[in-house]
Image 1 (cartoon, rainbow, N blue to C red):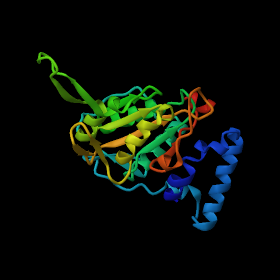
Image 2 (image 1 turned 30 degrees about the horizontal axis):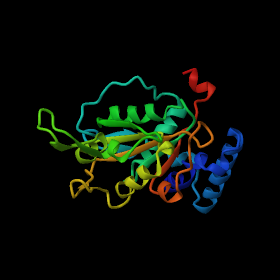
Image 3 (image 1 turned 90 degrees about the horizontal axis):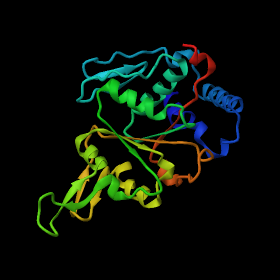
Length: 258
């Protein structure tokens, strides 16, 4: 059931063909899908899906309900993000569930729904360094990987390679959040392909070498829906398939009263 949720239901709201659905219609579609799933794989009760709480070693991982995230090298940082609201807890659980596999995670939701704040809070709670990179139609690969720059105090025409933040994070095992993913130009998407799939490498022609991602390196991407905000384009299906998709739900009135 968890696998079906993570693969199909968690990203249902991000499908372009459902963009015209109202919140109620989308919820009805999810309920129908859940009923079908219960027919295919019966459970005594839907609530039993989250009733089993395994025991994790608190010295090596941070637990969120039925799932956990391995602890990072940093000390846990206090955060102001409130995880008490039911919708926020559900959003956090679905992101943590997606973290159980090594695929990158694509979060989609309306502007201001808390996509960036949620990833930042999870990084702080689990002790991971988070590198946030804002993408736009002007972003180039050198902004992610690096470039040759003049040597400080060096002679005329003396250059040296300087890693950009993405390449540093890849080597050091940090988390990366690529914000506004559907604003990135095609060249950036193609440059990220080898990092996102099973290869997990970045080839730098200027250096003539490849960089292999650190085992703890993880990529999150966030974007607003295609119809919200100008200049956005639909990501290629082959590119989106490299991600686990999670649709971040908006807070309800009852959440705001907590």
